[in-house]
Image 1 (spheres, rainbow, N blue to C red):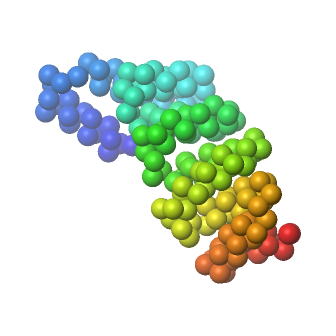
Image 2: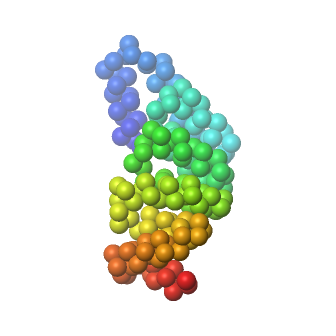
Image 3: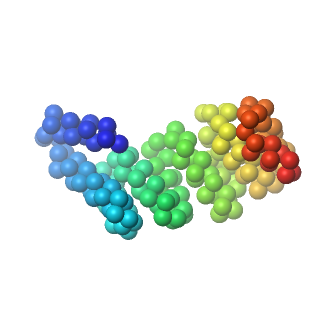
Length: 171
């Protein structure tokens, strides 16, 4: 996070004529959001992060901060929407793809969750959280054999990870 801020400040110093007020305004809103988080002022933090994103839609640190603040405040549905927008820009952010998949499972949307876990497993075929999420989504969608296959694959790849064995034993 500090690295990004330093890079943005360096860019301001090197190219003062290019969007300096724009970048400064986004950074200012982002910093206000961080201060609000530290002071446990969730609504103010969310508003500041949203403002930073509105000013600069590709400000990924602000997007991450918004997502994390939404998740920590328990606003999982709004976090899912923010994650969806984040993944449109950063499709390889698999950590957030797992979170989105889990939220979709909570919302009883197994086909959408399956899509998220399938995308993740395309890039990381042995991702433990991806395999577990895929298995849970497949089970919820009534695809028992695919769920068992994913669990077996995970259990063979991660023999020390009890989650796979527990899930297999509960079936």
